[in-house]
Amino acid sequence: MHNTQSDVVLRRITTILSVVIITLTLVGATTGILLSFYYEPAAGRAYQSLKIIDTEVPYGWLFHKAHQIAGNAVVVIALIQIVLMFVSRQFSKSWLTAWISEIFFTLSAIGLGWTAMILSWDQEGFWRFNIELGTIEAIPFVGSILRDILTGGGAISTVTVQHLYTIHSYLISVTAIVLSVVHLLSVLWLELQLKKMYAEGTLPQTDKIQQQPANAQG
Image (cartoon, rainbow, N blue to C red; front, side, top):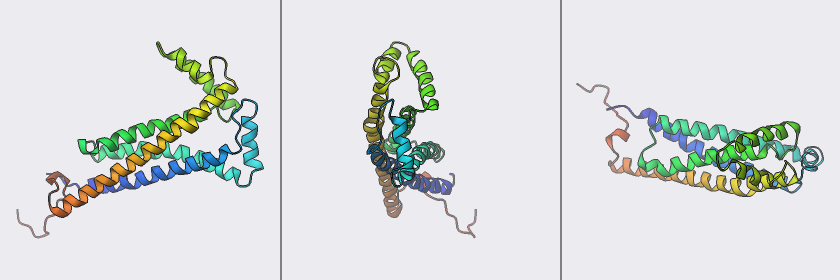
């Protein structure tokens, strides 16, 4: 019989990180909507429109920076969340929904960063994306199809930017928001269930904090 004090602490941290994840997701979504008012998804205008946002739009630089920070931070927090859930042994059947939603959310967050690399239309993003396309095209059977879907069937162009912008803004973003909500609700529900079981004295022994009186005898 092991002491589960650390498990309880890790569960509390898991709940806190779930709140942080949905907060960062909403910050990223909100700032993304604000940026979309001025961003132009076109090969010749994407970089210039972002430059205008940073220099001419009131507080545009702040929203742009917040969008970038939220996107990078949520990936790190999501990975930490997975590690904590594993370390605290939260991989039982009762945590199935939390696990599935967190894993797919992490993949969505990484996908958001991946699809954003070409949206700035700068040299670094262009060549990184060009290399990534080569990797995608090397995938057996479906590589060429995926490349055509992303690029629009030709070279990297305005159509490519528009495709990635649509995937980034409408498909993956909505999926990430839904998954973050599902994850938070599932974690909160499990926390309430554990508190209820503990109050009723029906919590399994392995989930109880072992407490012995200081003067307890063998």
